[in-house]
Amino acid sequence: MGKFDNHGLKAISPLGGQEPRVDVFTGLQIREVTDRALASLAARQGSEDAVKSAAASYLGGALPEAASWTEHGVFAAWWMGPDLWMVSAPHDSHELMAADLKQAVGDAGSVVEQTDGWCRFDMEGPRCFDVLERLCNANVRAGKGGDATRTSMEHLGVFLLCQTPGQGYSIIGPRSSAGSLHHALVAAAKSVI
Amino acid sequence: MIINHPILGPRDSQEFTYLGDAALIDRPDWQAEGAADQFHDYLYLRDNPAGEHRELWFHEQGDRSWLVVTRNTVTHEILNVELARDVARARGRSK
Image (cartoon, rainbow over all chains, first blue to last red; front, side, top):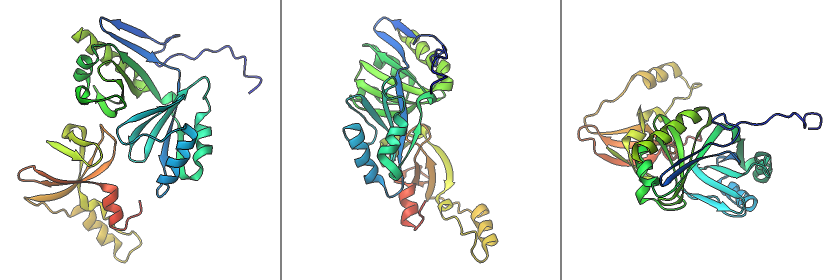
């Protein structure tokens, strides 16, 4: 910190733009989301309960159950696998979230900074079902708000978080393949709409 | 083929990859007497039953957990699905 503060550099989005990309279709919008900090949290063997209670007091609410996501104030978290979660918060206010979370859970859990590993696209509008059912295996029409599904779209493993069934979803995929994931989403949208 | 994941419920087998016989969990102790022979058997000898078979599957396009799937190799009926870590711990493996 200090002498590097005025570097004059500007971060680019996963798609390479100065501003997050927005694609608008009739009844559907696909929006690149770049303002979230991410950190993964894994419980160490035998410390599952300790991690859950430490994380709950840091986040202000319990970690999500299997295949779901939850929101507590500025924090959101989703279940990635057995004893493994991803925690997210606004980047501007929580850039150092991984360090804070590690402080909170101590030796009970392992925390990895993940912010630059992923890209996120939010899909909103009444045509979500039609597009998502062409993209992935997840049974979106039977889903409910709060579902978090790890599935694949084309060749990419992604997380699909349901905000509002049929109306709002977040798709989180590998950042280095942001262009391919975006192409898949837009191609599916164009084929439907 | 549908695999009934113990945590996530029924999932299409296309989401999974197959490793092989669940006996791979019983890796020999490399410091044991006769470890070389045990490793030979561990690596090369497999049962090939026509009927019930316990095998390791990986939920690659899902929650990335390892499963022990009991499958009938004749009918492809899936009889039981367990988390591999539960099976391994039940056999005294710590990792």
